[in-house]
Length: 229
Image 1 (cartoon, rainbow, N blue to C red):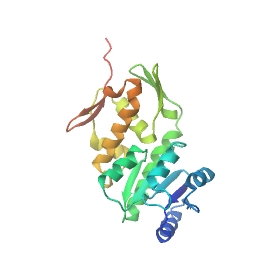
Image 2: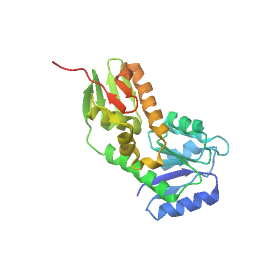
Image 3: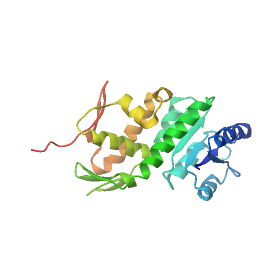
């Protein structure tokens, strides 16, 4: 049974979501003290976190930042705020998805299932090493290393890199990446993919690899590799 931590201060909504998710055999935990979210997260060790933006004490962005500094657990924002900068901020902080309130429960469960399947089916695979542009990509550990150092990627960032590397020097369409990452592309803002790719490039900058994830306007993205004679 997967453990889900729902960081939500609306008691009515919390109990409604808890009841619905329990019907899908998810074990849902709430927050007792909104000034100690990180401690409660550490105590529970959930498999996935769903978090609102507007919370008592500190907002969801603060707690996303704190959780992400300690863990790569998948994080989904669930918020009534609808400004594009809220989604961009959540993705920049390392969230995996963003759902706007009010929401249809089928959308929530689809995104939870897609995220858990992507993260935990993928992470149970044997460690796989792949060379790219003089760097070593270790899929099982979500790291990429080169003589310049080692960087750690989130699950989404590594999954994007994995798909692009499997098709080196070939364009992968935005639609294909969205379907691979989130399953139901009509629930996902096109901007979500852009933010994730830009975040991946930013992570690759210290290794000098960011120029090799290229944008093909109107088509998609490509991971380039040097041609060998």
